[in-house]
Length: 352
Image 1: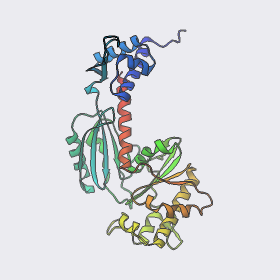
Image 2: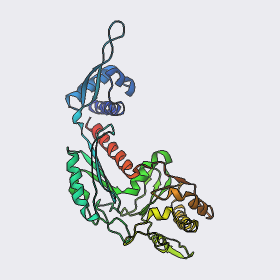
Image 3: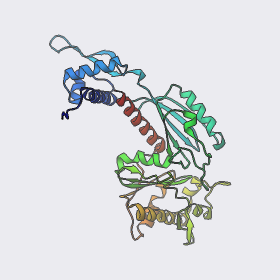
Image 4: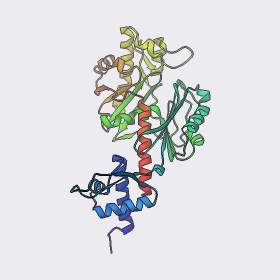
């Protein structure tokens, strides 16, 4: 039995290597493609010819210096303009943002709209229309729980940003991946933090993501990490739902379950101590159930209370190193953006 790969398979794999090399380096000559991919120059040339004929690769019109003893002139090739784009979307209390991204990870167009929860669907339609084009896929970060099976936003008690049961896929169309903002922020941290950690998001809302073996542990329905009602130590030492700690300390925004971040950061030392103990209770639960290598603290107030959190975690019978998040500039959008580009590259490579 002949177990050698077919010629079509060899060509397909070669074309994929060439496309991925062009994604990494933007433009390469045939000789550079051969060196980058480890294939022969004639094979690289044949791949470029096939991909050019299929509209996936284009001659940039740029040439290498040549002649007079400097070798042959080489043509630079890049991905063709029509290989497609991806959409990264953020749905958050601050508003709705959409970015159209190319295969190099560059933002081609960007649009944003402020929106109250009841107007999110309209804002999502507007930003998607404004960035235009026909993206091959979309990745959505939502500051609400997300049902794993349907991709719809879920209404849970005490979530501060309650959009309701919005279905982004019906608005955006095409392949759409939706997850909550804390999971996307954890994905953004994964590059620097390794494969096993717990990510605590401590801001106006509360959330947790568990990363095990490099994967986000989302749970059966996708609602793992919803820590608002996890029992922890209240200001009086009694067992209290985590979200209620902030109500007892008077640190909620009026008429909302959202935490008043500005007041919290300006709170007295005794209040910060109480919050540190409450967060330590959440850390204890994460360590007991998931055994993370470390606990990463992000969000608008979490890193600011890191000394208080570390002091309280240090008193636990079993803890873990507590460190600040490394991605601080729109971490949820950073995670969604990276996933959108990764999936777009995979689609382009598969078409080769």
